[in-house]
Length: 73
Image 1 (cartoon, rainbow, N blue to C red):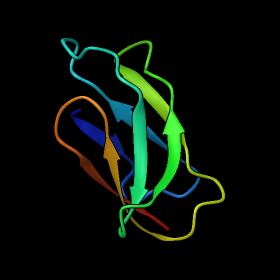
Image 2 (image 1 turned 120 degrees about the vertical axis):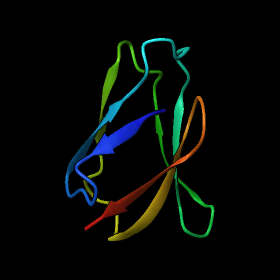
Image 3 (image 1 turned 180 degrees about the horizontal axis):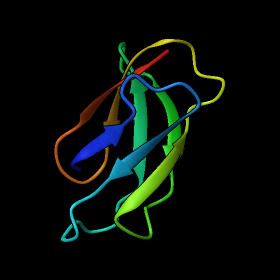
Image 4 (image 1 turned 90 degrees about the vertical axis):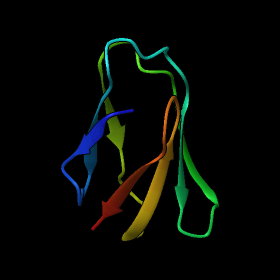
């Protein structure tokens, strides 16, 4: 995974993936490691992540490659 914008995010975040990334389901976890959301494998180089209803805080987004930190306001 490459990056997500905006960071911090409110309602949605856009994940940008390298073109060579194999589509992999994404998992968003809170700071305590609890799974908060599952997202389907992105079909292209970008994925829109729905963050509505999540409490403000720091999250980790895992999928292909290293985890990304995402702040939600």
